[in-house]
Length: 390
Image (cartoon, rainbow, N blue to C red; front, side, top):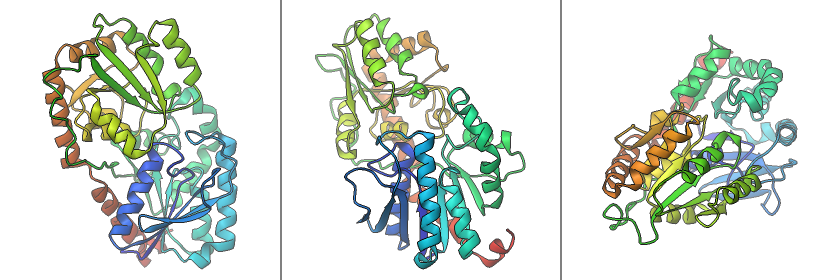
């Protein structure tokens, strides 16, 4: 097992979304297993440039990132440049044995340069937006320009990893020659995820719906609001946790649909508070139209919530339709409305689906299992024979 792993991700808690959470959990579990881990990520206002947490070290590099919840191409490129400078100035002195880069871009070039200058093998962990074909409406032009660089980095990596079968299939469309490993995301299952009262009846004020995700086009929140506007049931409230460029538009849409009194927008919450909100909810809704493997859905399953989600790659792997939740065709407002109506009419069904989802999360998805899978690849990448092959 490698003694020291460098993990590169341009976003890391409290900055970023699901990929940031995954990186933090994997780093934590690797550290608990006795591995020295250094995380290279973006600086952000108010965050220390260097800190120790959960047994590993975080180094934050200068980057022009303005928002905690999202970054644009130029901001990611600024991290790419800073990470290359870090490799040239400090990479050899830090002496990592293996580099694990989340996202082929912007993290991959620094991993490749570290290999060229210090012989450190690297692994690319695909997360979604770094895969050509992911969200083509918004990322198509970027992938057209960056695709050759992405495939160059994949070819020279010891391993390329996807977090779901669907993301692996998408990557193979643009690089059919590429061998791709699959390592799922994980989740921490709390010891008492389901409140005793959940499932016998909803609270007096109605069912508590909750959704977690970036407020952007990918997450498809307008379809959710339109579905809710057509519900015949009156007893429900929705909390949306997250932030992003679509926030003001969604608030305005909720107002036009007459839903403002029933929908609250809570912004980003820390993990402890997020768990409290999930534990207090009755139904989790996730209308996203494209995913790798969504941590938000895993967190909901761990909290024993029934999940209503679109039948897209990633979600289809997590949610067993009719067993742990309900899947609907992507962007089908009427199907989403019918699924919500079905659960709102049957608290006992909500409880049954939620408990089955929690059992599935506990059995199949644990961060320790995810970290151990990455460590096995890191050990294989660090063998002299593997390094000699590139």
